[in-house]
Structures are given as C-alpha cells and as structure tokens.
Length: 277
Image 1: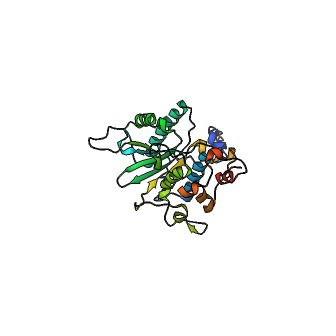
Image 2: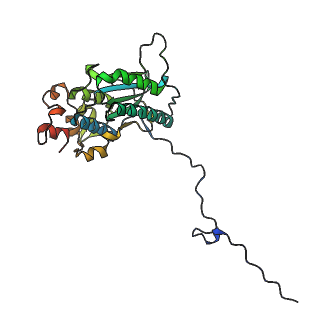
Image 3: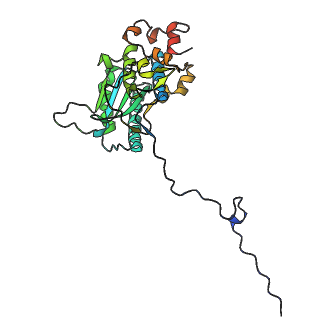
C-alpha cells in the first residue's frame, strides 16, 4: 500500500506559546464592587485626624471659624446611598473650593457626615471663612447644591453658617473652635478607650442623647491643605496621645491661659502646645 501523505501541523495561535498555557485566566468582565464599610461610630483615627487638622489650622493663624451645616434632603439629585452621597458631596466641595480660590482663601476645612432622626442626611463642615463673607458663601453653596426652596412656614435653612458660641462673629478663640470640634466628634463611641481612659470623659464629648446612626462609606475627612502630608511639610508635630488631644481642645477657662495663634513663637509654651517645632 502507498504510504500515508504527511499531515500538516495545526495553524499557529498566540496562546500556544503563552507563559500561562493555551488558556490563560481572564479577569472578570464585570467585577462585583465591594460594598462600602459601615459603622455607627466615628473611629478614633478619624477623630485624631480632625483634631490635628483643626489645631494645625489655628496654629498657623487661620482658625476654623465658620461652622457650616448642609441638609441634603432638599438638594436636587441627592441620593443617600453611600457612593452617590459622596459623589454629590464631592461636587459640592469642588464648588466650595473654587469659591475660596476666587476670594484668595486657602481651602482649610474638616467635615463629618451624619444621619439623624430629624435632620436626616447632613454634613457638618468647619472651615476658615471670615464672617463678612458668610452671606455670600451661603448663596454660593445653595446654588452649588441646587437646593429647593423651603416649604412655607419652615424656618430651617438648607445651608446654615454660624460661628458656634459667637454665632455671627466667628469661632476665632481657641475654646470656640474647640467646642465646634467636640460637637463634630459626638459620634465617637461612648465605650472608646485610649491610654486607659474613656475618650468621652477626656475630651468632654456628649452626643446629647442621640441614637447612633450607621454611615456607610467615608464618614469624615479634612481638606488637602490640612492633610497629614501638608502638616508634615509644615513641620507639624502630630498629636497622638489622649493627653495631647485633650490639650489641643481647651475649654473656655483653659483657653484664657493659652496664647492665641497670632502670639505663638518657636520655643514658647504655646508653640509646643500647638504641635509645631
């Protein structure tokens, strides 16, 4: 019988010489996103970051004197789902930073998201904005958030700006902005301990009887100008221990004995308190 004709080799395919074999694993086309973490309490690391940012801002002579509350439920397009809320808030802060730049002001602020039984979804912001600009800022923020007109008979404002104890004069004194920071930290767990001491007792925190509300996603933050990287570049000495954090939030009586940020000088007691040097 005649010999069989030679068989030609199969056509070349790129997978034939792949280091992972003929059928390398492929990444999933539509990976399932990880759900944002949620917690009913503000973490101690977040509280430490807020205190350091606020104390640093005061130490450079620009205390966070304007307390801003944004009520989101009347903002057009707002969705309380975690990622949608953060995206909505990011657009809002972008308009806020542009307004600050037009006014030749640095973007110095800290913020905390909350969800209360009556106020529902809202964000507290503590920023360095002089009181004479608050009215103009309120108009800008209302426009940025596309807020509805409040119903007839409703006195609550969608964007509220005050100076804490001083109301319309600005929280310039140490005890004033420190009081606002304490209010921002009210969602720290009442069972949280640091250095063998209850944080609530050491920092003078009080949730005023409010029930803890779970917040999904990032609960708080600080602006880039007050971030840890910015503080490091300015030679800021980070406050870590509970005693240091407590000293950074003076009460009215203690604040009278401490120098104001404008009088802080290297080597002085106030400079060491401020965390610089």
